[in-house]
Length: 245
Image 1 (cartoon, helix red, strand yellow):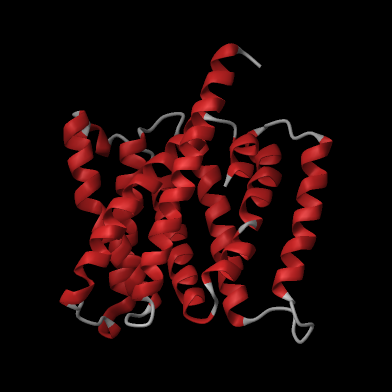
Image 2 (cartoon, helix red, strand yellow; image 1 turned 180 degrees about the vertical axis):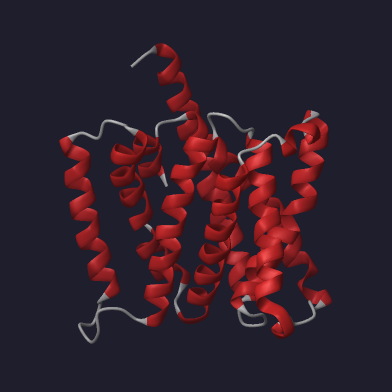
């Protein structure tokens, strides 16, 4: 591994640690919204809240012109995946404690590591494959804690969100070769906002003024988390970065 790659991996690890902390705060805020709004609307609100921050950030960096110099097909794929991921996770938070949802979501780093070898050409050693196998067993224990049924509806929703997140992480690594982090975050948020709004349709519930502070918290933590997550997978090897989630 070259010194440049080592430095990029280190920066990626630092960014991932920041992203994990930011998303933990965002998820706690999202859980406050889930009893009041449909899952797809929650996904849209999460995106709408972050868009002004992302645009401000693009302006400060002087990158607004580069927002349109992107690989549209992959951005559209990330948008669809992002809507499904956020809606599934928001639905799961209606029925599962945050701790249990996180326990299942910990399968994501294992899946990213497994996908990094065939899709990104990264070398994954035997120790990491053993960790993936053991991690899968751990997820199965969480999914069936009482032996009553293999998978609850909430558990299945988190699992769907986990798979979507893993695919999104892999596409971040691919897009990072040509697109800026600003454009990657902007289009993901825009597609999530538009898609979530359209799919919610007539079920859309007017946002309560009392939830303004929650949306502000989501705007800050969600934007910081999405940027640092994007930078983490853009800079570092996915199979190395993912276990730090």
